[in-house]
Image 1 (cartoon, rainbow, N blue to C red):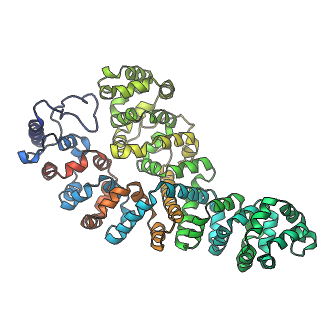
Image 2 (spheres, one colour):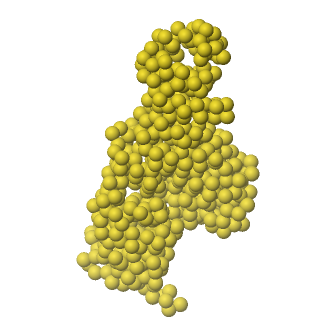
Image 3 (cartoon, one colour):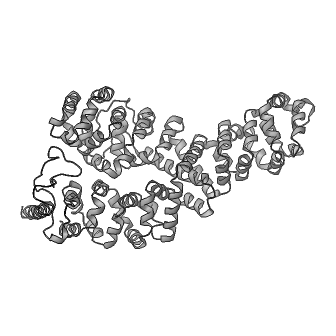
Length: 589
């Protein structure tokens, strides 16, 4: 009891000092960030953590970032965490916190950064490379390569066993692409590549021989196939235009023979794989020349194929939105919630402000559990609702969207499920996290492929059947409704594959760039998503050494929803630089 009174007294002192500093009755220090329900927009009672050691020099006129931060549940929890307090007292923590997006990524991916955080030169190189990869044109090309690898994982795994052959196909992509439409002829050529070497530099001679295949010893067994090829003007043009094609085949005859046996041919030289190489020839040439990058990429592709190979659309969705799915998968209960209520989230995704507010105040919206019609009425009159009033326009716009309201009101358990996962949802919906995790495109992709995603986590419920989600389980307990680790692993593989494919697709990339992409794909992926923040952090080598020395502690914090919530708040970066923050941390208990 005494301890509680002491804490409340400290809270009252800081709140009073801050109010005086910004002007009596001025900008409401009672505002909570994130908003916490009915008190939003009013002056809240002094119920949050405060420090008793605040002087005039600690308060900047008009700066409410520290009081805002210190009035949150996340701050209240973290200042009582001995590990956080110890780290936060170190000046290097402030240097890390100046780039909160990078700090959050470091903590969430501590293992991935283990090998590079203590090496400032390596870290700086990766940060520069991340900015290079974080280019629309490179990413577009990289996405095509990643999709090609994942959709044809079996074919590329076989080709990767013979890197010279992959290079051969990429170097002569047009000729192989033309021949892929004539499988029997292509197989006969590859099985006897040495014999076809006689046509090196003599494309016209090959065309004539194919037209009279029954008279050619090497073609007679597949005469009809070669005659059909000879009558395909476009295919013959592609082959005869490549003067070195047959010479290259003969030089790789042994490997081609091994890959073109009946057991391997249809898998290795699948038309869709050859077509993909043709469209991204330079990227596959780069892959073929770097065994580490090639094998790492194939490993990620096979992992994706194992989870989503039966659903090309879902696989594309995962690759195209790997950052969002990775962020969602970091909170298993949230991913399960979104997958189980995909249509409802899809409807809300186009009303970002309303959705974010609902997630930040999920417990308050639990009152609509089992009665979504009441939500529709409250949203239509949001200015009169104590919870929605501060976002009245956003909710009124939502209420006017009949399609969205139909999806919401058809999902009877939606609000109850939100309330049951309130803490994780609040962490996920801070400004730094919300736009990434709840990207409208990603949520729509999940909705369009909800059945595949639910299957991948072993959830056998029909779409829209949300029984037991959040009703009887504790927060984060996913018993009985599937295991989200499958999607988490797939999202991680998708991010890694995207990075490695982007490295392959990047023109004039050097050998170190490729090695880094092969060896540190998860760290690389995190950097590309926050390229500017990591670029700034690269100039703080002491802060990076501090992170490396305390890697395990940061890893544990990265799993704490309150830490993620706190770091994601827009006030965090400024607040950490303030002596008020230091005083609060020093006196926390």
